[in-house]
Length: 229
Image (cartoon, rainbow, N blue to C red; front, side, top):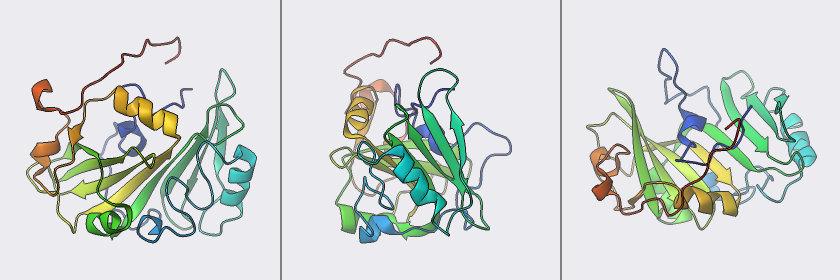
């Protein structure tokens, strides 16, 4: 089992949108109700719910999740090779929403969350400032997402857009977040093609399948695949 989802080539896309049939409904009220990106409570990203990638011990983080009444019991799975361990859990009386991984089995490496549409892009920008980069991915005719990168804070948020012909707006909803270690975020930026943030704009301005010459950021390093990757 492979847990490192940040790199190479921005595999973070797979955290939120899996290749499945039928396609997922991205605006889902049964996902995690969380507005911490707008309030910075109980802690500011990349800390979430008292858990900070690269700092919080895996055992401590798992206890936090197990003791939180908002969640059902997490399902823990160990990697087939190596020390990595991951946990997935659902919102109580809701859908599967959340994943947490430790690559060394000792300290949390990253957290990925699928949110109910309770926050907007404008609210997150008011609380966190403007993102540095953006990247759009189409899911269905009426569903697309734009990933907004905050590399200095080591997190990414996922904004919903109503298809590839729609615009990213202040009212666009946030439907996901990924909280990472600084080194992993840095490697993601260095191995990805990204668009510089240019404010609210049509989805087409941020699309991931744009010609290479339309990207302001291109890979600085190429990773060599390892067995089992």
